Image (cartoon, rainbow, N blue to C red; front, top):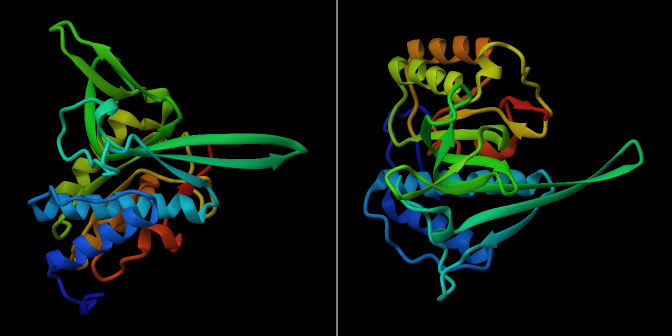
Length: 251
């Protein structure tokens, strides 16, 4: 792992370490990664996608890779266009027993898919990463004759915005607007976060660290709305799947 001064404000990491981490993760899950991403922001996004899968592994889910390429390649969705059927994703299953009743929970983790608005069925936002219930993604034909895939809002569990940069106040305020559009229950206080839930609350993730004022803004927004602001991922690589100091919620 690269040596990094935790106090450093440099949000960037050597490309070779990201490639190594992505290759290692995919090979452990039964697939192969062929380098297609050219931008560092794509590679960072892919590494966070993998970290979210690790989070559910630590939550005792059984993980299965879906829709590998014919050559066994894991096909990350590095574009906002394209249908679910043409890209790989993870299917996660967990069995629980509550009050002597066995329940099976099945979820999916997707990359760069549209998410349906909570307020208007025909408004969509493309989340960098989203988690939904099994079969929560549907593909339908638009009026222009083209198909598009999206996550139905009532099947959405959480979503993640990924930024390969240092956090700043304006992008944090903007994230509050995204949460209001697709998961307003956090903004209006209907859903309460907790420290030991089933899933992470909506989260915005930064590679770099912010200054003192940014930390104050982050603390204020997370206290009000319960979502996560995760920064300094190059300094604290395991933040997402360590459960430490992150808000979760129960469905």
